Length: 310
Image 1 (tube, rainbow, N blue to C red):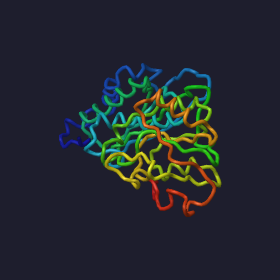
Image 2: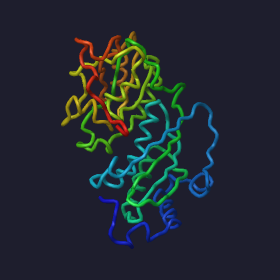
Image 3: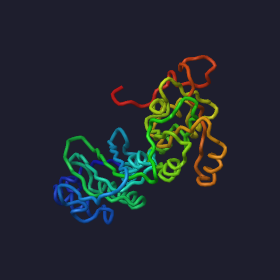
Image 4: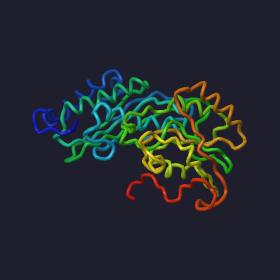
């Protein structure tokens, strides 16, 4: 569904800013608390929390992260889910969010209502409060940005650093073909899986795969090491291929390092008991040497995921 309308009375410009904000409150419903704990003041008031807090931000932009083929409810859900995936990658639990949206005056009120209802449904599903935001006008633009606050779900959180030479490389789910299959907006954030992995002492580092395995794995690789991958082990999504699995991006799966001396069989058995429907794959391990060494198995030389401005 296109965000735009040629009928002025059906556009957001027919409401004006104050009536639009009132409508947004209605569309969000109970996931938006009353002021000062939600929309209404210049800032939202949040209760103090003990322990580490997590903060992330991600946008959805028309023509980049969605197009007319993506239903507006799915666009709103994707806005939150992209951020939830970041929280999951650190073993966290989401708490509250603020969102800013930038709209052309011709944006359809019907489209925008469905967008917010999709965002609200996803927020209810994960018990996230939408505590504030902003609306701005810009010709030719439909873009929304959400900032999500979370906390560590257990005694520790995971980061991208911490892997060592000899560690094993694992990934959840399947990779590649996210655009063609609709996975890029239908995915489920791996929040339960991330929290579970953060409680496993043999898991040393973790991140989510959003820009493509070939790019994201570089952030997990310890200095002086190269990821050696088994091409036959790649969990390629149906309709994709090895290149797609390495470079397509928007998979929103968890990529993590397991200590080289860990009992991998025990980890995998425990995973199957806890997450029987979620695939878990060992891709290879971090080894010494250069990425173009011969007889090294599949390396990432010649592959690159998505990078802004490249």
